[in-house]
Length: 410
Image (cartoon, rainbow, N blue to C red; front, side, top):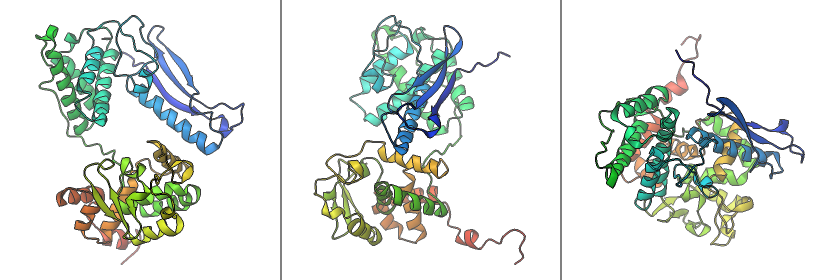
């Protein structure tokens, strides 16, 4: 049996033992096997870390850059590439495209057609959908290249080749049924696009009779346990009041942590009636009003005093208070992750978990599900029922509270 060679050592943070003096430069380190020498080569990345001068800020920046390089490497990106000719590669990260042009050797490879296809659908689908397509096509291209098909014409991709790839993602990568289905859908559409090209009329779409799986991998954010909520609250409320405010908006008002929360403005909050208007351009679906529970409305008015700020300010502005400029896309998430790691909490707790946590708490408090449907912005009661079933399961208060301790008698 051929020995499997290590291709990548994923990024690690070197933090100089926590020191942050001018002489102590933190960096991200990873290794990639050089295909020309067949040896692991070390890479160190400093950018985006050492400009911060507090331990908290630098740790957040380091984690952010570690995740950036991890995602980049896992996507199939490599620091080694040929530099012969010709086209922009849409499969590379967009931040890299702004600075560099990826040069490839031929115009008939899987990467070439994937890039052309992404350009073709760019105006037809949402930006988030483009990201999903790009990610899946990038992974397939990386797998093809790992098999030595760096310069191979796309015609080499036959049904048996696709069988190998799907067996790889099912049995080695252990992807879920949903992910496998996404790969089938995206690759089939891309190859259908290839068939329509003038010089590819005889190309046969290889996406047929492919294997599937029943595996379910649940990576969605999980509700936070009652005991852990207390620990989070004690630390975050004191150390980062703005982050705790964002958590409360999710918990009490079911605001999604993306645009609904990040782009929330003071003028969208009715401090008299206790309501928030989630306007169409900020919402996932349609315009809706959500209620602010009295206990949270008191916080907004008495402690955070949001009603005293100009109406056109964003609630989550720079410097920890409302302002004319809103926070970056991942700012609050990174700050929460830093606290989660500091408290040694489970990684299944995400920033988005607080929305689910509030929903479960409300359901356990026997708030009518018709009211929860409106609060969560669900289009039907069936969606609400399924949501609560998936997140809360069956209610078992007697088992949770009255189950006898092992070794005791009734």
